[in-house]
Length: 402
Image 1 (cartoon, rainbow, N blue to C red):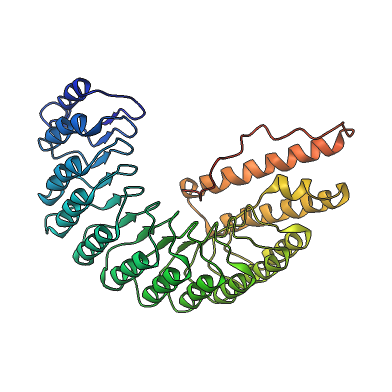
Image 2 (spheres, one colour):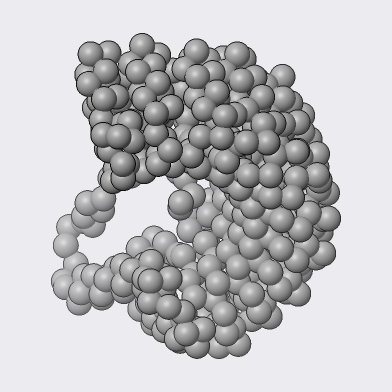
């Protein structure tokens, strides 16, 4: 069962009452305690942690955005070190001090640690604490997914993470979006991944990476045979970075998802991407949203998809592509977008993807089809005095898809 108390404001007295529901004798089937954004603070979290020590069934603990300090985190770390059943720990958005980070690092060194997913995004992770964390994880054999977004990690921190990837043999996913590793940090990670045989997913969204860093990562992709997901969205990779990625992916046989949303891609760069699509034999999902593509790119992508047998989803800004052109060109773009979508559907069928795995892709295709239908309907109506703005609110912050 799940104890879901997220998005509530809970005082200490309420937390004490809730804690009574956690022990295994009271709730033998409880596997998740979700107290994200519950404003419990240290005094409210204390009875919850004490009750967790009385159960061996809870595998997920979510304490996001609760104004917790190292005091509470140290108590959680004691459970982790003792071999508690916890597999997923989310401490995102808490101002954990050095004491808390040090306690976590110590727990990760314990041979009893069973933690598999550790989320420490936006936790004021200082350089010293990151060093302790990466040193502990170098010998850890349980953690599979590590989230360190929004921690002001620089190239120095990326060097520590690169060293971790050279020795750790269990981490399969690293998410460091919204940091500032820049080109030097990207190059260090690329160097480490040249020999790494474990990491499957690397999210570098919004890290001030330019074409220099993109070129280093492209060189890595020519030899790395295990990385499956690379997100470089919201980094200005430039024409040189785009060309380098396309050259590498023409022969790379392992990368299945490439995120290039908001990557400052211009129409001439997009043509290179289309050429790569025609040669690549591994990509399943390609995200090109929030870039300047234009008619020539859509035509090239449509033609290239005739030769691609694996790509199941091409994420594009349908409305923006159509509305930016004249009515005649908009009609042509709509036709080509239909072809791209149909060819993606054919690839899904060709791969015989199980229905549950293909559902999210089909949902996206359905949404894009609805957009196209709406655009056609609008084009059939007489011109009005102006264009209605989209009813959907503009997101305050761009983020890659989960």
